[in-house]
Amino acid sequence: MEKMQEIFIRQLELSDAEDLLKLEAENRDFFQLYAPLKDEKFYTIDGQVERIEKNVLLTKQDSVYSFGIFLTDSKQLIGNVTLSEVARGNYQSCWIGYYLDRKHNGKGYMTKAVKLVVDYGFNELKLHRIEAGVMPHNIRSIKVLEKAGFHKEGIAIENVKINGRWENHQTLAIVNNEEYDSKVIRKNPLGIALPMGEYTHLTIVPSEAELIVSSGQVGIDIEGNIPDSVEKQFQIALENTITLLNSENINTDGIIKVNIWLTETVDKEVFVDIYKKFHNGSSPSMTLAYVSALGTPDLKVELEVWAARL
Picture (cartoon, helix red, strand yellow):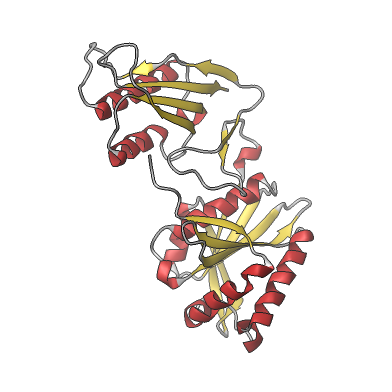
């Protein structure tokens, strides 16, 4: 129902060296405002090949994981997001850094890429904590991290030399609370295209959960009225589902899977808006299908929900 995600990430390979050099060269002055000084070799193909080779080796050593940010349609490399200084033992932490082609700032791409890499860090690398440092005047970067779930912790005084000057940095961090909380986990693993709409590829259910399944909910309100509009029926069916879940002390975070059947095409923007309000920003696994008819001619929507009670 919603357009395909605009970006995807993958670990950088030697074949990306030319595109990475182009990205760095075209944004040289812009990136330099937020980064340590680099020598001239960095801005050569040999410099970028060496950089990628070093990161590949560090990945094998479980120290650095460097991802390119790519546009889904054109496969153009537009940025980088890296997990570095991975510490194991009693730490299980790392630092995150990132940058994006200035032509693509303000489109939400960086926030999406950070969320994807945090998910990788927590679910694939099994990290407990990811930290970031941002110069206090870089408000846009701080907002990216906050939208991705990071919280502010304090100011580190002149801890990194940026563009030739020692700069203060706002420390932000995100902690993997899912290690301790028994709850339904939703994830989109790397190596597969991002969801094309409001759903998640994988749902992981704790072994101790009790399975709750609803019968097909339809767009009939509490007084027995059936609206003509498919969008209104969809909204009522979702409201009925929430009422059912709440009656068993389950909220939408406990949903495992949603199956939706429609007999009539819905307005895409209205559908997405209604459904986002239902799941509160964390999309469950979902299947949407169009059928010729339901059991009652006036009904245009039916949905079934599988949920976990913990």
